[in-house]
Amino acid sequence: MPAPGDLGLELIGVPQGAELDLQLRMESVSEGVLVSGTVTGPLVGECGRCLRPISDTLDVPIQEFYAYEHSTTDETTDEDEVGRLQGDLIDLEPALRDSVVLSLAANPVCREDCPGLCPDCGVPLDELPEGHNHEQLDPRWAALSQIKTSEE
Ligand SMILES: [Zn+2]
Ligand SMILES: [Zn+2]
Image 1 (tube, rainbow, N blue to C red):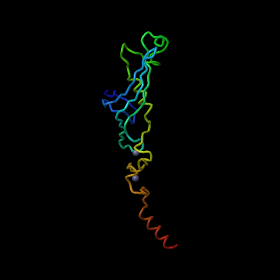
Image 2 (spheres, rainbow, N blue to C red):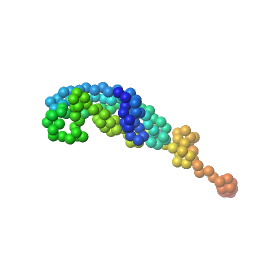
Image 3 (cartoon, protein in one colour):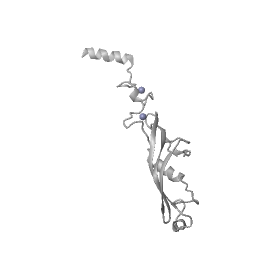
Image 4 (cartoon, protein in one colour):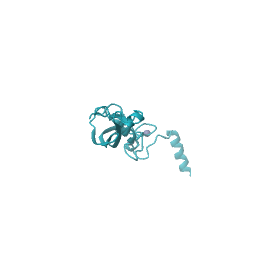
């Protein structure tokens, strides 16, 4: 099924319309239907440290109970607590949304040890030479420090 909009968090999620693969099993129980399985699909986002794009694969378990209309569960619970079968149909989207959002990191990173950006020039630190910094000595001071060194 195509992914609904806003499936994810601010920095990472499933692009709207991307193909989601749902492997679901439905089990009839006395009060309704238990749906369980996994959802897989593409994930795109942005590294929370260096802002480079991330692409990843979503693979999350999903489990949700849907009560039959007029069952005891239907009559004793709220619709936001327990899903309802609508005739023969189930609305999977709220359960899907919950599973996906719970599985995502609020601060995704492109890799575990991403060093992030140089705070001064905004270039990713792993693209810069080792020892990169912006503490450039004023040439006059540099000259002075040379004199000092030679005196020692
Ligand atoms: Zn990164
Ligand atoms: Zn820099």
